[in-house]
Length: 253
Length: 308
Ligand SMILES: Nc1ncnc2c1ncn2[C@@H]1O[C@H](COP(=O)(O)OP(=O)(O)O)[C@@H](O)[C@H]1O
Ligand SMILES: [Mg+2]
Image 1 (cartoon, rainbow over the protein chains, first blue to last red):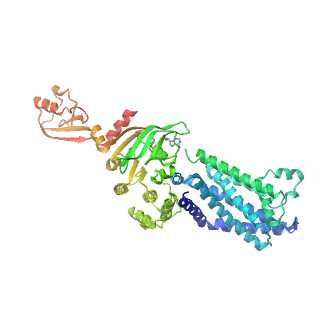
Image 2 (image 1 turned 120 degrees about the horizontal axis):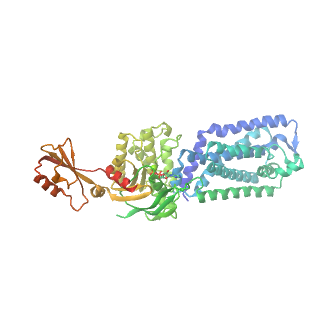
Image 3 (image 1 turned 90 degrees about the vertical axis):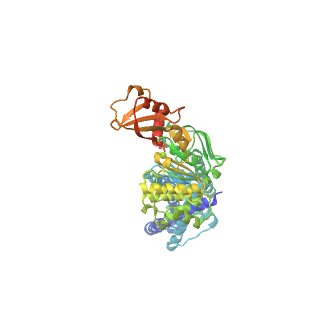
């Protein structure tokens, strides 16, 4: 294992965040606060409780998931797309670094950043609503697995994309709708029966549900199913990344 | 001399169906400066990119000091430093950070003293805290060299190191290469400037259309393929060549004041003795004579032309 290389890439990626600190850290805090003001205060005054949890508290896990997904995606996709775009990827490809090490360092850095953002949002949320975390270990597990999975997904997008437009396309057209429709702001039991079935095709439902269970002990779908699905997404992303490296897809001609 | 790099039957066909390399065989000796000379599109960058792991080969094999570049990529790549043709840098990084990064990437522990020395040798020390985007093109080129040297490679690839660089910097680049050679680093550079190969190389390989058409010691190349010209300054100008001299390949030049005789140093005999004899018999006297050897450029042009 080339630890020096993993450390170098990881530090490089974290330093990149440092340079865009405002964007990486401050903007999620502001947008979370806005969510609380809009959803918590405005809508929350009408929907007082869902499953015995105040609406403000109910949306916290979903909000964190929302940021975790978008941050992981954008951090990881940008992190690998940018060197491809500028051409500095030559150095990575010519270095004595295995594919595993490349993934570990890029995805590790992206996941770290989104976890930091997640923690900041959690802390911010604590100012607005009383928080309760019933299963802290599972909460961490869901957080970390999701951060890693979606950083891997972002990595895949960053390798697939051949323009900045495409880089934005997947998060914009797929991930944002899926997260908003994934039960972040409502319980799927509030939907008509038909849409309850349809919504189960949305992977984000499992993430949000499982994550919310770790907070309040209640879930839209069984926790075991959530956990299984989370691991499944992770496995799928790992398989795709493995294939990318095996074929050199979009990395080597 | 043991070979430090061995390329065997290497071929590359890009996804477009274009065959950029055709059965390339090449051995590089430890410590030498090897110039790969060829026109644009000949396959120089492709060859280097395959050796360095940036492009997949289609068939063949490459070993670096006995390490297969695919099977034993860590050992092989650890020994190699690459200065790419394009000026690709991280615009927002400082010089110091990017060079230190390269060292880490190649698996070496931090060594600030060494980085300092590299930066000083390349006249980059004053710029160590500057963001790369604030540097001139020539400075960026140096940064790329510093990055390539940061992990103390034993083989350095310089892909067109002086393309688009002003004369002064080009000469400085040559000095850098010289110093590196003195420290025992094997250097492989590509260029389409003959001047550069002539100046720096111990051996020259000529590549054209994906094929290595010649590999030769530079001096040997000049000697073997160099055509020489013998120029005779005539005592009295001539209007036409006397018929007795038609057998020789002579040309009149300088308003009839010079006779130019072109001969091949590779040939069995140069024909000079016979020429001089015939000149004497024709009563042509000359005041002076000089010979000149064709440059690598002329050799190169004729080689590439023959390959068409
Ligand atoms: N990624 C690629 N896909 C298809 N053709 C390529 C690619 N890269 C280079 N080529 C072609 O291969 C040939 C050799 O290119 P290159 O190795 O860059 O030449 P050189 O460095 O000698 O100028 C050129 O004709 C070029 O167009
Ligand atoms: Mg080239």
